[in-house]
Length: 356
View 1 (tube, rainbow, N blue to C red):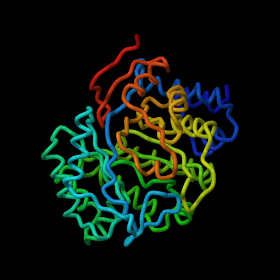
View 2: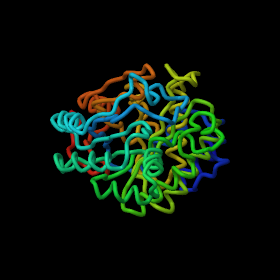
View 3: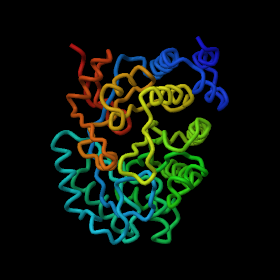
View 4: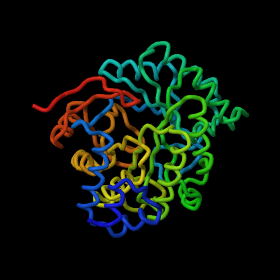
């Protein structure tokens, strides 16, 4: 086996240089085997997890103009919308009716929405559905809300938490390298701002996830620098419950290009598992890679197959429309040789479905 992989299996923390070497030189099968072994050390029970949730995009109006996004509409577009609180509550009600324990609300950077909209949204959902965890509003949204309202991001987080926010999704990270962000998302928060929001979230008692969107204009060195930034912040805060790498989808976007293939996806997932030695959970991305690749991912370092995602609009806008229900996720987990466990946002077990 590759010497760097043996070092990682012996508990040696990977350097950025070592991770870059693994990206370029390690054989995919042994890279996957090493990532699977590390995953099993984090999760020695023969289980893999999933969550039942719904993505609610409360607005598609956005001033950011990210070149990789096919979902947003500019202010004034006849296709722009803002969901009423009643409309959001109805979507939550539908999701809870099929067993959802988590609601993910994300939207565009809409200048017409002040913090009062978000506070009303959160308090209304929490009042009507107190047991549902509200996992909502990415770091760019937090930065945007703060600027619109003349608040600090820490104060914005505190007010949203008081209104009912439970945790932050990792969206908007893309690649945490300014050269890349200037090219693909110049109107969005900087890498430093994204990291600061997550640090402030930890300080006020919120948890979060971290993501990485790869396969566009970034280099392997950029990917590893992204992993390093996430790992360093986790060392200092412990804020992240999970890491989710997913591949850029070029359909209907200004940026164009090609999506990362399965080989690149599995390599990135495996290196992420080996590098992020302080984050317990890695999530597979069936939304961008499909069910078969997500099943393989459960042997390449992922211990979680993600969510049922009762509603998904952003990736679908790029022309990718994989759909899986709870029974499908359980089937994929069982086919990979594990018992399936429904979990909540914090990875606490709700129910177990054993293999027959």
